[in-house]
Image 1 (cartoon, rainbow, N blue to C red):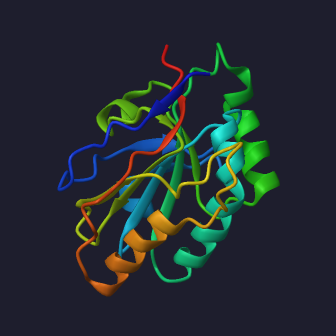
Image 2: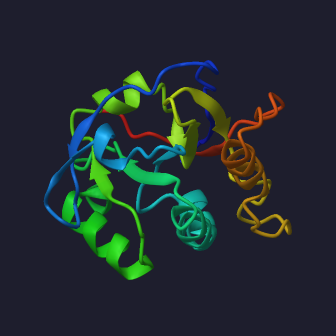
Length: 184
């Protein structure tokens, strides 16, 4: 599992549409189902990546807090489940239920959604404003497995607070880092 940083999709990009199966509910979920009139966070995740496992507690805390403030959230796994069976849809459902993800956890079997979002790693975070324009992409915070930095979600929180306040998000943004997406 080589450390990979996010590719930092261009700010101002309109949120690419998607329609994917939710591994928990079994429903098909699209962009219009998760967006809100305040904003949306799209997170590329997987089950087995130690970087995702490390930040999962803060992802759950932060998403619950900001869902209550009207921000939409969605998690997407695009990993090749044949080569990485721990990332298969039935395992995704188990992980989502065990951790209490308060958002849909979608499976991108074709990997097309990851490609149009230019996702490179897990976790990879994208924040879109009320008009579905990309205003933040990058890391949750500077905590990583094996460093002593606390999990705070400070980078993502700052972006979301700016979105909620109708203020510009700082253009000083740091890439996320973690395991590369497991391409077919």
